[in-house]
Length: 83
Image 1: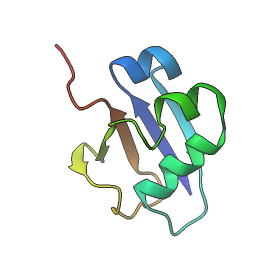
Image 2: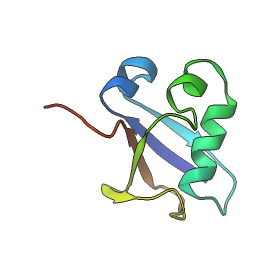
Image 3: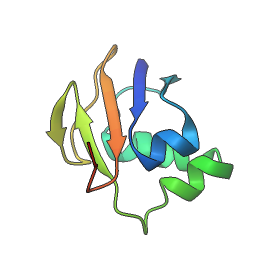
Image 4: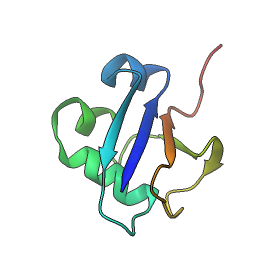
């Protein structure tokens, strides 16, 4: 399935504003995060399991157990985001 992944605040500075990711279905937000971490480099650094990262699925806050669907929009951002 194809997903649009958007990054905000410090994650956006490290990874850019957005990217398209292909992931085998079925998958959860946790599986997507693990997939991105497995890429290594900056993805592994800023999305590491020890770091606090919040998620949104289709513009609604979600926990990592949320199930993804083809065409979904996922956002990752730090817990506190300034305006």
